Every structure is written in C-alpha cells, then in structure tokens.
Image 1 (cartoon, rainbow, N blue to C red):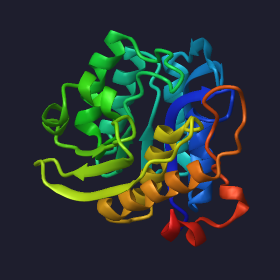
Image 2: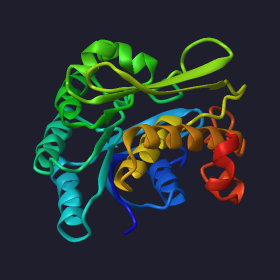
Image 3: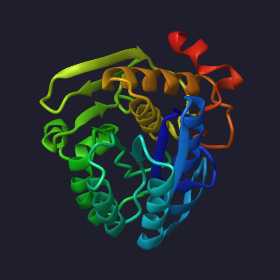
Length: 259
C-alpha cells in the first residue's frame, strides 16, 4: 500500500518550503501526502512578510478527518504555529503511539524570519518526547540545548550539518542512547538556492519510515533526495530560491546514487 504521510506544518506562499515542499517531496518519493495546516504565511525567496496561525480547533479537525478515514503510516511535523497548537498536536499523537513521527523543530526561516516564539519552543519538549526522529539544523539544535538534551527525550536525532563551515556537509543520525548509526559526508554545494531543504529532508525521512524502511535507510535516502533537489534548483527569485523538488522531471531512483 502507498505510504500515507500526514504533514502538520505551515503553508509557504512561495512554494519552496512548508506544506508545499512537503507535498512535492512525498509525492516524488511515492507517498500519499495529507495535510493539517497550522499557519498561513506570506513569503517569497526574500523573506516572510506575514504569518496567520490557524485556530487550534481547525488544526485538530484536519488531523481527525485524515486519521478517521484514510489512515496514517507516518507523521511529519514542521512549523507548529503556537504553543497551544503544539500541545494539542501532542495530545493527538500520543493517542497514536505506533505511528512514526518526524519532528522538524522549525524556528527560523532560511531568510532569517522568526517562525516560533519562546513559548512555542518550550512546548517542543512534548513533541520531542513523542517523536521517532528529531531533525534540527545546527542553530536549532543549540537552541534546544544540544545533542544530549534532544536525545534525553528518547528520540533519534538527525543532526544536519548544512550550517557548519567547510567544504563538506556532515549529516549524522544518532540513536536515543547516543550511538551513531548512520552518517553521510558529502561536498558542499556553492549555492544560495536552499530554501525548503529542512522541510524536504524531514518529509523524505517520514515517507521512508511510513514505507517501512529502517531508520538508517530512510535517513540516507532523505539526504540523497535533498542533495539531488539542490542540484536541480530552478534558480527562482532574488533571494534564497527553492530547491528543485521535481529533480528536472528525472525519476529520483536514477539520481540517488549520484547525488
């Protein structure tokens, strides 16, 4: 059966990140994408100009509608919108203990815009306790207290190295006990067109888990997909442009090994 992936995240009007990036990624990787939108944003490659949180009752109604009929094989959480939404989502997910959850603790957009206040970040604690894998970039990891603090919640940690310095990007996957179970060290791309990489990675990882892949295999496939998407970025906009989720219309399986 096609993996059914529920995305709980914000909308990006520019189409490069958020719900739009998640749907594109999951579709490219053979999954069925379903959504519970937490916030509507007005943004483009230059930044976020407005954010409108969706009422918590509507977020829950979207989740309940999907779960009650179609079913869910994995959940991806991105921009959460508010502390109230974070706690409400945690309540729903705690009632589905067997479903893998990938939590991307979105705090700051690629453009630098703030997407989570202090109360919302504090509420991330509950989502990390429920998550199968947490996928922060390095600044987000520091804001969450570092590697040991995240792993103390009992989740896996996909530590993304894109914000580090150097000619290579070092991505690592740690088990909840701190054991390194997968890593990839690849050349860094010289490009500003990386908008949506974090969202896309987390969605690709969730799609792999929803399809029944072991977490290390899902991690490796997600890294390869995002690298291929960066290589095929269409160069849109005057700022941080979106990656090329459609990979130039070339099937992902033909690109993965070379990414």
